[in-house]
Length: 334
Ligand code: SAM
Image (cartoon, rainbow, N blue to C red; front, side, top):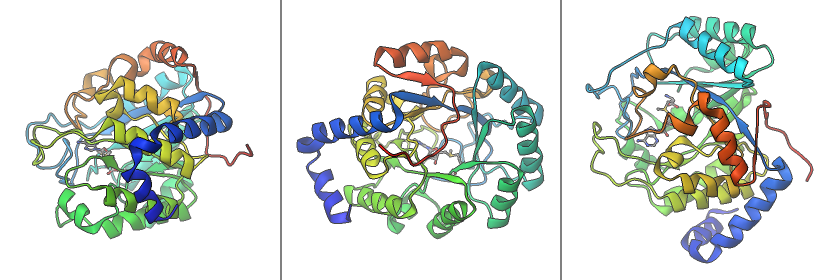
């Protein structure tokens, strides 16, 4: 859809919401047959060289207990997840300067030794083409890197001068070129975001054609320069999930932790209207609270991998089946 048409839909979302929700739901059913794919999320490190104004693990936050999982801790989490039946692991972390290519290459190979059939997703920020290439050769399959915003001015409102939108976007095209199943996305309602910015995001997403799109409401963190800002809208996030499903029928779209943190009802509406993925937390429980991207991040209850049974029940209640299969991106004829 062109930017003009997207803007009309966003401006008139009250009038079109129900239709879009119904169409997105019906399309998701035809493509994914009411299956929700799970991914085990391991939060590797909350040490970050970046200073994004919105993020609780930003370099400038001195009120945070910093941690970096040891290789042994990560492999333990993968073993635990493997025993539970997980077939996708997502390694996410801040841009920790000590975690170099050699560290990641060794880790990727060891994870693949433990579970050769599993898909491995990395979400470890901006790196060089060569680094992404080596990690891909070592066995990484997918990469999540939200573009955050496609608008230059808005990007500057969210990030200090030392960071660059051009580089982030280049990283995404590099990942695509290297054959990663690539995920992008943005926070909804980040400070300074307008509907026009969201239109730019959606136009960019259509151009990139990512295999995954993760969006979630922005949630303020008290130890950031944006502490006084308002959280993003659940309703707008869910609307965008409907729209993204219709724009990218086969993409893997998670119901994100930030959506569940703000509103379990929003999470269910997202599942019923386009999302097909859930990412339970496999981080060792004693570090989960430290990966505090925003206020009161959900990481226990149904957000925790150890409570998979409860998540399964919650999904069954709304008519969906939790499945452990890899759920690779695939163009399906529906
Ligand atoms: N360092 C990696 C990167 O840059 O992609 C991965 C970690 S980063 C913390 C993961 C995502 O958390 C970001 O892409 C951002 O959209 C989200 N995030 C950070 N702070 C947030 C906040 N206050 N509210 C909602 N989401 C937030």
